[in-house]
Length: 168
Image 1 (tube, one colour):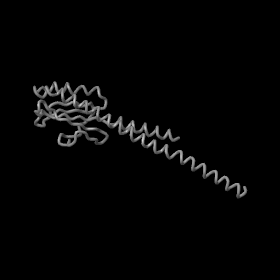
Image 2 (cartoon, rainbow, N blue to C red; image 1 turned 30 degrees about the vertical axis):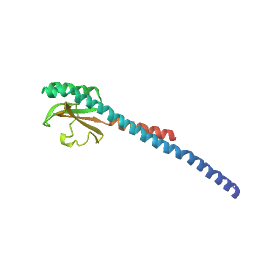
Image 3 (cartoon, helix red, strand yellow; image 1 turned 180 degrees about the vertical axis):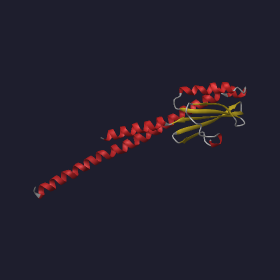
C-alpha cells in the first residue's frame, strides 16, 4: 500500500472517529440526564405516596389513642397489608410507649423511636417516616412507618439497562 493511500485511509478514519464521537457524546449526556431525572421523580413520588399514607394513618388512629383502644389502632395499621412495600408501622402514645403496631411477616423492627430526627429518612434500602398525631392542638402520640425501596433499586437497574441499549 502506498503512503498516499495510507494517509487517505488515516484521514477518513480520523474523520469517522470524530463523527462517531460527536454523535455518541450527546447520547451519553442525555442518557445520564434522563436516568437521573427519572430516579429523582420516582424517589419523590415514593416519598409523596408514603407521606400521604402516614398522614391518613395518623388521622385515623386519633380515636384509638383517645379511647386507649390498642386493638383499633392495630386494625388501622393492618391496612398496610395491601401496600407491598410497607415493612412495619408503629403507633406510640404521648408518653412514647408502644401503643399498636403492624409488622409484615419476617420483618424485624430495626429502629427505635429515638432514632427519628427527620420526618423522612433513607437507610439501608429502606425509607422511614414519622409523623406526630395531634388532635385540636393536643399531642396524642407519634406514628412511625418503614417501607422498602427495592422498587427504586429495580427501577434504577431497568433504567441503566435501557440507557445502555439506547447507546448501542
